[in-house]
Image 1 (tube, rainbow, N blue to C red):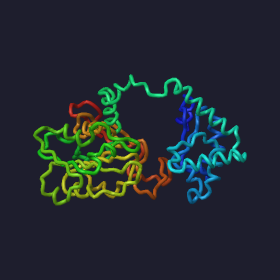
Image 2 (image 1 turned 180 degrees about the horizontal axis):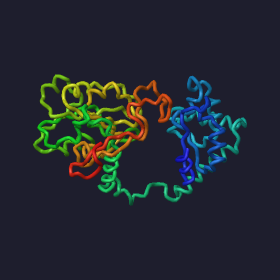
Image 3 (image 1 turned 90 degrees about the vertical axis):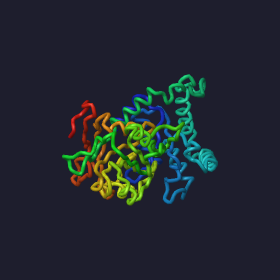
Image 4 (image 1 turned 135 degrees about the vertical axis):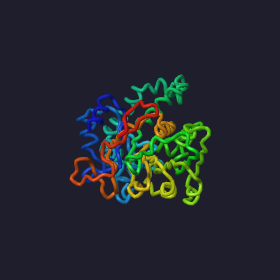
Amino acid sequence: MPAYVDSIRKGVATIMISYSSWNGKKMHTNYDLITGYLKNELNFKGFVISDSEGLDRITTPPRANYTYSVEAAINAGIDMVGELMVPYTYLEFINELTSLVSKGAVSMSRIDDAVKRILRVKFIMGLFEQPLSDRRIVKHLGSQEHRRIAREAVRKSLVLLKNGKDVSKPLLPLPKNARRVLVAGSHADGIGRQCGGWTMDWQGQSGILSGVRDAVDQETEFVYIENPEKAVVASSNFSFAIVVVGEEPYSEYEGDSTISNACGVVECVVVVVSGRPIVMEPFVDEMDALVAAWLPGSEGGGVADVLFGDHGFSGKLPRTWFRRVEQLPMNKGDAHYDPLFGFGFGLTTMSSDGVGVAAE
């Protein structure tokens, strides 16, 4: 709670209600938490918005009683149900709410409160005087200075989970002057996957693949195959492989044969692109090194910076990395705490020029 309470004190203007339930009560209908705690006790002055089709999910099955869902959500304290949050049935929502107000099931004072909150935020933001963004700052979008900071953030957030099948023989950092290098995996050359959900490609932003290509020597033969066959890897005399895998934005990752095809044949480092820990235990023994890259965004070159030793690994896990889904929920201090990698874990390396953290 502290981070949320602090953000409200500092003036956060909008809060979205989650799909989840609290003690069996759907959050979209939880008057005690939305109005009683958030608005009254914490004195939140902004407005509360529903999640996409969140009203539909109040009942099981969804939309079993839509009239009830609209009434319960609005009376609980939800102020805005935008078109994006009711993407297909917004006319039905408008008609239902209008009817509920005319019948007195939703009071005009509740509607007035919602409108007042929404208008307050718009006035504070100056939207009525200046409805469009300030175009004078467009020149800063994607600027080199911003990209430099983003690339630094990528480097510092990477977490090295494994470095060598034998701890006395670490694989990382990788040599830039290798004879032949393989880069494989579905996430090596996909800027959308590296950014995660709610993002889009924009003017050819660089990713992990181009970062690796730029990092190695000009004499190094660079090969990219998204999903190579094991026989191809075995017969190609690669010095090592960099396998970049992960999950699709906002969906559970269902497995990738690329790890076994490459790591079972040649020394490899696996880079996992994901917004959260995912099941990796079945593959860890096959890997020579494992890196959690999270969602590096447009500056995937920051991954190559650390893989090849221009900078050292220093990141630590901000949450426990579980072994199996059946273990969840699992937190440090639990009696059954048995993680694949514990909270705060992260190996470290030196940069190629000796600057940075010592190897662990």
